[in-house]
Image (cartoon, rainbow, N blue to C red; front, side, top):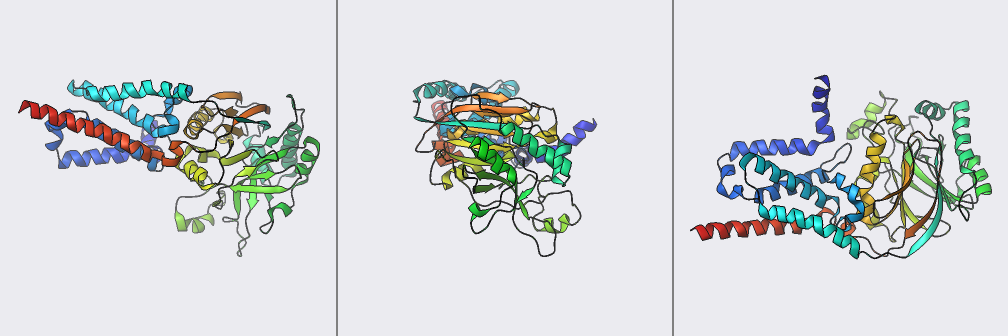
Length: 450
């Protein structure tokens, strides 16, 4: 019972769209109780309307962990040909449509044949479109994901300045980074996960390439001759009053083969109650009384990175990858299409639970929606590579220490997917078309009766 009570309070945070829908239905029934029983609603048009409304709600209403009803379709990722066209919202819409038709059948012994035909056609069209997609030109990238498996105690101790802890963290990353690469050719890119380097980097505001880097990166590049992308803290500025409020970014920092800091990405979407608080202007006041909260600064620039081999990639940090609208804006704002997405993550706070698997499961949708493969680097697992069809190619599991060494063939694409260009609004014509068909059927039926 206690768990149920707590879940009631958590539900508005995790699934607020369901609460909004419940309130709307309550108000509708109270205001239009007789009209809702009208003979017109015995048809499937209401299922279309409610499925579309719920899909829009779960897409646009902020959630702590963005989840849509259509997520489980990803297990058939290599057959989801409509995903690059309509995206995850279409699969949520069809899922809701099926649910509402089953509820209508159970409660009223009525089902819309048209809606069942729509669902069936949707299922059949997906694999057909998948078969029609042609393979693209590829480029090669040899990469290494370093999964050092740093415990939370060791991580926080190193960030607090403990010399022994910091030395242990840096040595572990350096040792793993310099292991022999088991494939043909040399390493092109070494990737460390979110906030892997424990000390802030003071990037040069005038010329980022003049930034003084920690000695460990010079040592690794001199021996491995590889580019490095690492998660860390980019120091922004010092406040006049001496506090640390929004003085650092949670960042992805890219160091080229010449040991120069070439570019940086600052995290845009900060996790409420972990990296900031959702209280707007009150956060500054609250920071004085909650010293444990990081209160990071919020990034503004959407960075397109280039390796020495001119492989183009973008970077997201942690839960940013779960927000399709954010990634749409990111891809539409850069001038060239990337060959790869890289997600830096640290799921160690959740321990050995189902969360790392769930986080990865939700992440895979971005690959098929945008047609771009994903490299996922985590502190303690699951580090993996997911190709542009949403298929997980190789992984390093939870709690394992080591490297995930990969020879990647990355697709070369000149234009974005239809979903990248239109987003959820590309679904609206489909919903309207289905609704109009229902209206015609209703008119035809009652016209024939009269």
